[in-house]
Image (cartoon, rainbow, N blue to C red; front, top):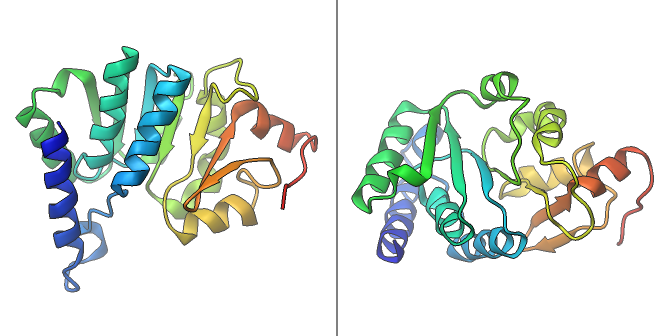
Length: 204
């Protein structure tokens, strides 16, 4: 798996360096450091039911699956692009990990509306940034119950400035006491609900 992770990181960087590619053909993978952080978070909380929204070529999915292998978990990943979904499936088949992942080809909003009763211990949102606020209520309902300040349940907005503006400039995870690491925010479910009740102030 580590060799494939290295390969996908390199090919993703090469792909996205092409200025002529349209946005929907960019892979926009997370960095290896971010992948390692995701693995650490999942393993530290023992998360088993893991949801990824935005598969791309499966690079970030591999990191989540690597962690799930240590916790005995399973990853469900959602991607709207048929081309990227197929690419991710092919990458997983190369290392024999298809059984650890459920690949779903769907628009995120459509998936959330069909699966609001499903619950997950860990949600990684890395797609469709302009709709984060729209997804917020659904995602908080889908987090496993019992989340508290020991970070047992998390929702992690994606990379990039758009996510940071959504995180700290609107109604999605602002004004709570979060861990921030290289521009990515983490918040437990209890922090989210306390924020909505006005119980937590921002730490500046």
